[in-house]
Length: 622
Image (tube, rainbow, N blue to C red; front, side, top):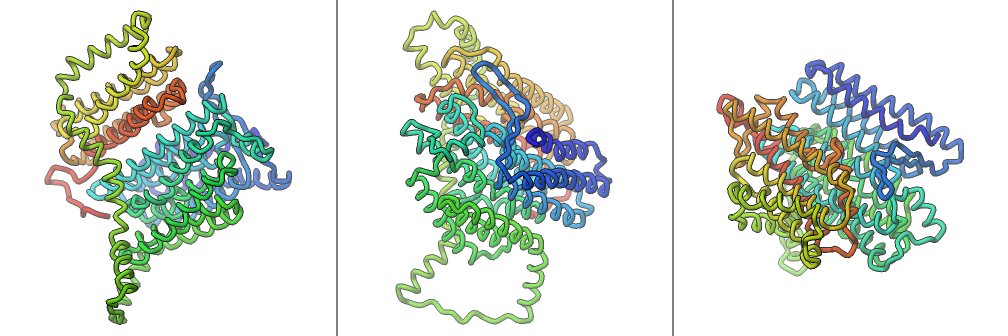
């Protein structure tokens, strides 16, 4: 039975690959291919679930293939099935099945019909990786897939300005969670000395054996995973991204941000409970964050004028209560709460367009003016203050922008000396000299060799900061992104003795993706298209194949699991020691900005309203 688990993931993945090859005008064929994949997957797991229950519902661990293995490093796919997996899987499969049936008619004759079903199938594949993951590495694969499909479904109406802008805003927050999850994996590797499975975590916790023994990391590691969960489930202070994600089709909003994707943070807390289940301070913090989010989100939802925003904040409030339930140890209640909230929000979002039309009709014929008046006393003033704060969504969007992105943009705009000529005349020769010194490090003084990794990582951050804010030619920004990655790899190479193959593994996907990107730039320039970053150009109208190819290049640069760079990111972080906080911070910042820079280039070139006047101009919002 254990050997069956790894193969269960292949069913939706094969369905996704099959759908890619279908003609986009054959709506019936696309739908039946997608629904058959989900149904077969559910049927296979239904048999597995009955056998599992008949065996006494034991925790089942299955080992998949090892993607990379050496004497000191391993990246293997492991799968795990327990009560949490069973509940999440059956909710996910039933809701995906129902939403797909609804979408067949809702998306009928939509130009992106095939693109929508491909994204939903790919999302379902990523969700399966997360739910069935047996270790952090497998979970990270699914986590990345869910994040990317979120971006494409929010920007589904890619001819409109606001969906594209909000997709970039959401993926920027997601990128923070991705890198924090990668940092959590890195610290766990150092603490455990190897990649431990979730089954081992659970058994050690049941036996009273602490997983992390070093005092600072007993709190640091749970806090890192808490940040990841807060971001993914839109808890305070990251709540403002969820209503912005509602720019996609209503069906994708229902399955992503009403039911499944937004509840993954709760699942992560359930999986990592053995790390913090006996630490009272962490449990109190999680309860406080969850209850605070529930209160604030409830206040905001009660004054929203858009029904999808109201439902988004209502869902956030319920998830906050689930965080508190998990921290209190009420896991069965949290699972039941998740299932109920997921089904309710999916139903509410699917019927929201109809409800909106009914309410408008009712307002015309049965409007009753409000009778409440502002009270000039403390209670009335307090009520009005809370009302105004809730209308402004407690300024969460502005707070996140001022705290995270504004300082980075300001710093990037100050780097006027980083332009193409200086990069070619100074940074490229510096990199070539560094390549020579990597293999002849004995000629360097010990003090310089000790500080060189942080210096090279700092140069990498400077380059990616400039690429993040650059508004002239896209190839120049692309070149800065690539050079930043090269300097990151060199910083790790100087940090300690390394296996040259691991650096090659990391850079192989970068080099191939970089070459692909430059080829796309050349084709666009040859066709007379603009390749600047000063506005959205919408080249996906007339160059759909180049759009898809450049999208793959961006995913490769960002470390998505389609190139060896994905494994390389985990391997190079393994060469950073736990006490090197400065180097860790620089590399983490570089990885965050790297993903944002390439997604920004992709969006500016290929998404948004087309710049040519003979194309229709869509509304700003969906």
